Image (cartoon, rainbow, N blue to C red):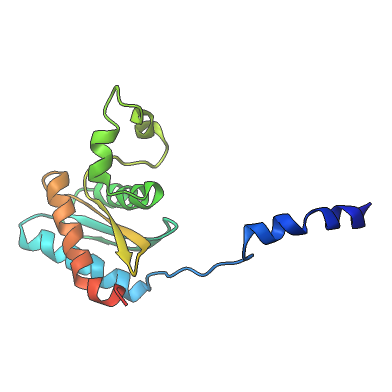
Length: 160
């Protein structure tokens, strides 16, 4: 019987393709450069913030907090980065999509989801590599500007 079952599934296995795949991931050094650049952009703008960089799976790689950033900012920055990779979208786009009455409004109730501007996908070579989240600037647009400055600092390294 086992033999008969194994003969019944070869077409399924071949139709599924390869059994493994390779992915590209940010190095910790690259994540640190992005976080430092984002923090510097916020600092130069007069804002005390926290910056988190997560890998493509949402696992925290780097977390920086400026000395006077609020105690909520590290967790919020990490949540924004996690939310961006989890939904494969910048969090500023999710703000509008999840307003009350919209079909995706329930996303706001998911554990760990932080639907505020400031979480930005990091892409390179046509792949999502992770995300950066910033919290502490005055509003989501300002947080996102800092996050984008962090990505700009590493973009040339990622496009190969």
